[in-house]
Length: 557
Ligand SMILES: Cc1cc2nc3c(=O)[nH]c(=O)nc-3n(C[C@H](O)[C@H](O)[C@H](O)COP(=O)(O)OP(=O)(O)OC[C@H]3O[C@@H](n4cnc5c(N)ncnc54)[C@H](O)[C@@H]3O)c2cc1C
Image (cartoon, rainbow, N blue to C red):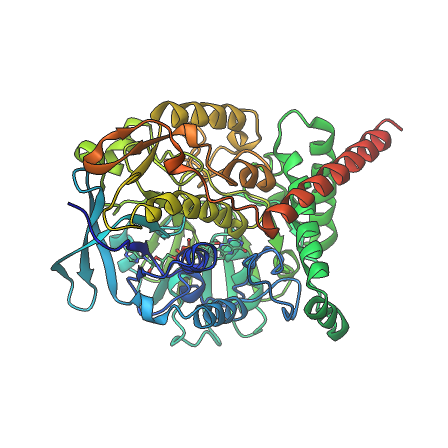
């Protein structure tokens, strides 16, 4: 017995959920999709992150959906409201409203091997009740994002924070009701969010900002600029120019990846010199010692500088590098016993990457949590598939991010793979009797050897040299790196561009294993993006070769 109509469930209406629904519609013409969204609106992190200065640190032409490029981006980097409005317009354009159920979260999902489908339990977020009705789907796409929950500094407990008499919040949950004029504000953290918040808050000279940092960051100049109306006109009228421009941004970003490889010593030295002199050229000289990191460039995320360094020179900004001991009633107590009195504390201390509430049970009743535990933390094939969990794609799971290029680019690569996996399964619903291929699951040995390759490449990168970093399971490089893909974004795209069908196990009716056959052929998704992507790769290789040749020539002088 099986469901009569194919139904695909997407979990989350963030940008990966929306992009997945659009891809299913565009590439397969498939519309029997339901998006379950826990909150009241779309956009995920781009909806909830509303702190002052919030913006993308990837040029927006690259941080756009390849199928729906936007000629009208006003500037090179876009702000949070501009990004959210772009995704809201795509959501409307592709008619996704009728497919979305808000305030409804996916509580649990269980694979029914006999019926070859997912049985999904939902939760009504308005009442907090788990619904009795069970939804069935032949394929599930999880779009929960990489950032699972706001994280607070190690050693600072919720009880600690509650002792504080003033207002306190995490950057992910900005309190717009609190006026910060004439207030003393502690901003804890100098990662991407902290570096955006400090310059934005300190624009008001009446707000006294103290930035507490654990370790300094490497920063690169932002190079923000506005697009002229003639440039936008060209992008609109000659879309190929806009695509070429986008691919050139990717190629340029992918060259930066070379800095992450341990063996590229000359290039790394060059980057170290360049970024050190950038810090010295912008930050006050009195702070250089505190601001120049002692770890290699790229070992932690490189921050695209939104005038953070410059803002540290403002009279209303203070940098505090003494470690925090605890939060007390009237401020923050430092390890040296000193107390910094403040009225407001903002924790810009990032997110946990560990998906703690994933209740997914695959073949033989195994949960994803159990699978992760057996492998020392989140582990996946191409960041999105797990052996023993058929017909499931998880967008931006383990090791799917790049520290230098757009996450959306990798998401799209994974979504293209998911769509191609879905295609033969949907085809089995054609005709009076459901026959042929019902499910696909990635092979265990394929996943293991992919991860062995991945972790050995990580060992040859600069990331293990960071000491403490959110890229690792417990925040230190002694554990497993669960965040980074150790290659250029173009390589990730190349690996995910189409399924290697021999790497997948196929099952037919009642979970009978199928031998490889034409039943599960691909859908031939060689669309224009793939072709353009290949051109981008070629451009990348040429530019990379020229760049490396010039660098070696310069350093041998
Ligand atoms: C401040 C900030 C700036 C960033 N800047 C960049 C950048 O410049 N470049 C870049 O590449 N990346 C950036 N990122 C990373 C960014 O998160 C991703 O690029 C992307 O937005 C992730 O989208 P997503 O849809 O996968 O996940 P999310 O945006 O996290 O969306 C997940 C959605 O799933 C919903 N959900 C969760 N659990 C359930 C459930 N059980 N059932 C139903 N729904 C559920 C959530 O409510 C949410 O709406 C930034 C992130 C932040 C926070």
